[in-house]
Length: 323
Image 1: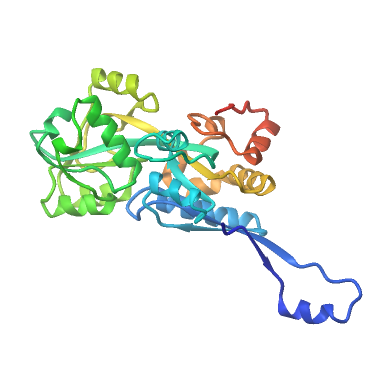
Image 2 (image 1 turned 90 degrees about the vertical axis):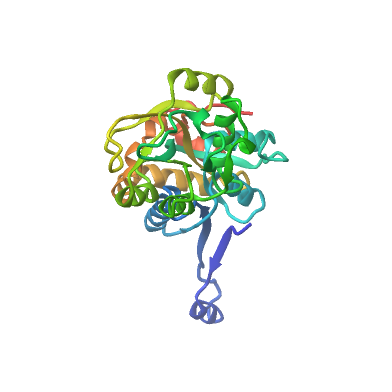
């Protein structure tokens, strides 16, 4: 794991030879945050978080990296390739327990903060004959990139509809590839799970007449009965050009997670800097308007890192015990 980077300027090393008492060195901690593809929300938001923390904590330098989102990001943490990541709450739970789509338990992931709802966007063309999930059977559907949270959510949604991936003509595409394939006429439907508005869909809607599939209350009740991580939510009318009605859809929660092995004081300082400067984050990306301290631990499905827990306890917040 890339953790502590100690930087000592050469001239200090030279001067130290002339002094009995050595001069102090300048220490810094370097952290990497795995985000998502450039067409989603994780990528710009993760970059903004990295910039804000680095600016407000001179001894903590944070760098964001593109990734394949939730499932892949969790594997990066488990493999010691990054220290932090953005991931969905449901995928994190499945990872902790070693449930599909994971083949083994990923027990070293910890929550730093819950961030915002991520809405299921099921994109269809305007005037499509697809009026419900059952209408996807036999259609050309983008179901999310391999190892992504999108694929996990789509699998759950199809299971609730008594379908599986093999019942559709599945393409395993990321956000940008999904919208590009719509532009090229290669898809009938495509799933994107992200906070709204997400740039890849905004760009698509500017060029092509699209719609979003709404889910019935009965379907959402059945989905939540089997997969309680989902919540019923709405993408407001007008969020995307041409989508002029509210879209009722399931949502999950985006979380900022980290490696359990990170030192408590590092995570404490990160958590404090994040919340003390959250207004800067809201200026950087509109989705940050949905990030609030009061819901910092809402929907947490894996244990809270002790460093983050210490900060929340100091602020009088009850920290859930999750095993």
